[in-house]
Image 1 (cartoon, rainbow, N blue to C red):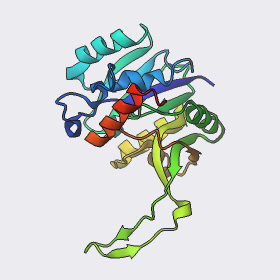
Image 2: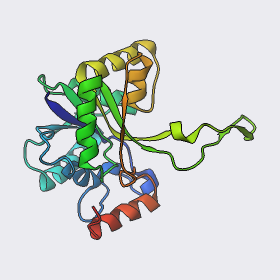
Image 3: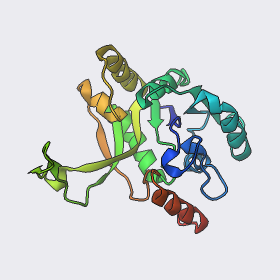
Length: 229
């Protein structure tokens, strides 16, 4: 089955001290997005990768991507007001022959190749898959007064990562249902579950963290400089 990469990269880097898109923040001489895309090199997913970005920053994206990636390995699509809208716009820009879409956060620059490949295989078999890691901490559910309400059984809990990978017709159907129903979800796997379809959990890696805080950014820069991965 033909797979294509979709990267939502419209978020801004305010919490990282940047006045531009988070995806263009430098992590070792390259923008974070370029480091992320390099993880997919040689997997047949960059022909082209669909990058969803803020239209006002298209020139910056084009300049940075052209400096670090091969011509024709990416296209830019204008992002929406919400991540869900941005992904929907990216889905509309996929190649006509794409059977599988691999949706990955621009801010997760260290995704293991094994997790990507397994997610594609599981999506081909089941319709959808999401990379996740088992929760190691005990999770507490609080009530409205911030008192302990319940403690879910830890062995059933997973922390969601990306990629989230789907058969193209499955994820497009889920996005249509969300648009018609007027609801938003923070991730695409939840959209697919909302329409009653299965999503297989694929074990990821703690290294596949999302760069969100200044601490995360410092960690990512150290990993790049020390060639940890």
